[in-house]
Length: 174
Image 1 (cartoon, rainbow, N blue to C red):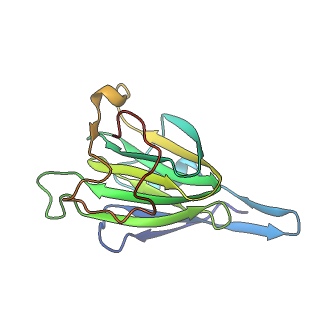
Image 2 (image 1 turned 120 degrees about the vertical axis):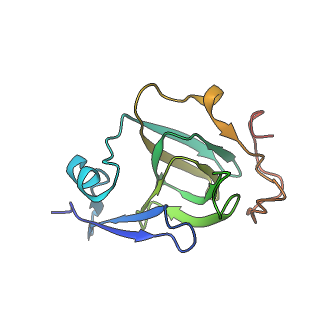
């Protein structure tokens, strides 16, 4: 019960997957499962086992990213609030290099985006606050920020239409 998932390929970046969980709703709210090891081992190649999970608490107008690496899968979702999610193809040998796709993520309609290695992850907070979760699957040691690639959030070649032209940024993202 509540342990099923629907998988869709993104419209443009086929390697990116949109995963919608089976949701139970009643007058108390909703309940859903966001991870079952056997599902991710059986439905994806390579088999995905998530090493750790992170949460980011964010205030309105925060923009994080564009960050990524060439060995980690990321399963991202908004567990509270509303997020403008962006995925960028950062593989220099790809026909879609620097192409991007945008998604709206929120806690009312749970869905997850599976981002493969070589793709940049970025998001902008549309609500007053948002809690963002990402699970990471990789072999070996984690590629922390000093071993990741970063593209400027307003890179003209990527040309993302962000909800704000003056977001709150970290020094890394400026």
